[in-house]
Image 1 (cartoon, rainbow, N blue to C red):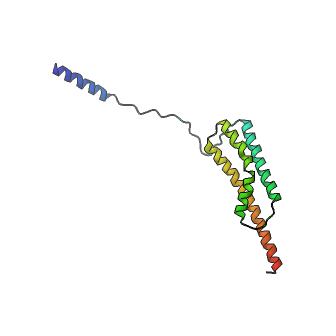
Image 2: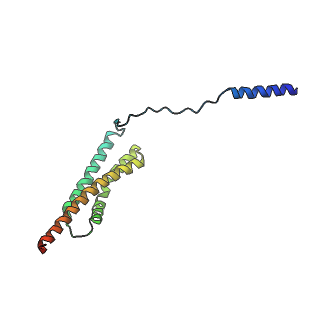
Length: 143
């Protein structure tokens, strides 16, 4: 009886060892060639909302710059103040992207890009105003 049990155990062990375990199946992904353009999956109305809000944001900034009078001070802080006044104009983009199910990280990156573009534009404009004011002071003092 013991011999029969031992043979049965060895047969079971050898049978288990003979079958090789299969590695887990990987999900097949179609490789995307580098630099290949992929069309957006956003709805047309979402894209239009984003474009309109972006245009509205930059129009607001241009209006703020047109009304701005340089009185000295650090251009970085002045830029921050000008941008803050138009910040609420970007809210429709966040709302539209959230309704579409866009990853919040992508939304933040998109809005950051818009803010950075605007900040560069405003800062360049304010630095030009500073340079004009400095040049005017230099010609008045005769240096």
